[in-house]
Length: 301
Image (cartoon, rainbow, N blue to C red):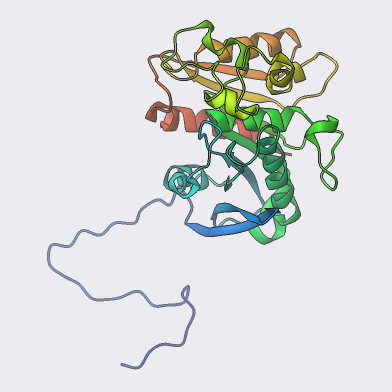
């Protein structure tokens, strides 16, 4: 038989049969996804930074976009390792762009937040290429990546946290999702932790230039997320998850920020994840993904 020169949709159904076969017609309740590897989004000096973009390919309307910032103790990241997990979000109808950013080895705070803002800017500028609704872009991160996501989301209009060509006088995203992120370097050791967060070689110390954290409050001040929270400052809504048994980023870090957000009457929702440690699979459970999907869809324009 000669090959058929017809479209995939018009290809005929086979009439072949085998005894004992079981017919089925699955209900397609998710999306087929496509992975765009190593998409360049900004060059810093001689270094090109990339996005790993996962997107549904059979969605009709323009989709919300999640720019995801992976945690790495503020060090260099292996972003591609996050692609399988992030695919669960893409299969729910979101474009997900996992962001490579400069680690503290080559650039200290606020480089990470500036890279995150550049990633958001890229996805907005290239929305048409990836079927994104540019009005519905969200930032999400875990651990140090969550800290970066929160700083990038809350710090619009702050001179030292803006770059020419990407300056904004309003929130750059529609919402932010925080998975167990640090929020105040000065209080990280106020609760039990498996790590000393005060030393020059700690993740927090290296993020501010390799100095003792408690001896340099002036360097820590711009890294404290609550310092960007006030009643008269418009902030994007935030969804927070933190495990009660987090051995690296104490649970109280989330409580401290949430208290500040509540006092300022901001749109903030905080889930205490009972028994969860740092980065456990609980944070990728169906319950959490359902909550995140509802949060995003509520805020979509």
